[in-house]
Image 1 (cartoon, rainbow, N blue to C red):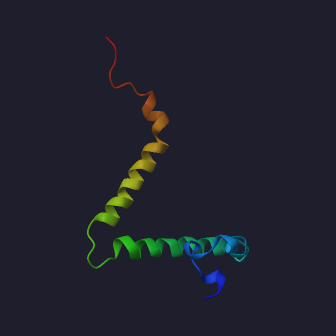
Image 2: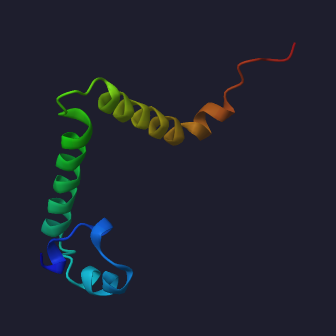
Image 3: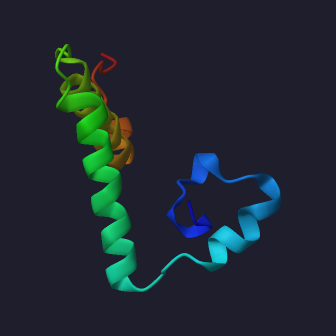
Length: 84
């Protein structure tokens, strides 16, 4: 197909500059890219026929790590073991 329809992993290194120049970096284009990525994630990990809890648990684990990273400075200042 045309270069602009190919996903990033199917673009050759020599075609990368041309592929990037065909991308739409407007707010609507970025929103459409996020929506495509989310539907691709859901199709691959959540809405699978044989699946299981792997996709949802991976999403929750990512949320936990991100939340911990956001609160790390606050958590590192709390002393759980106080010296007597």
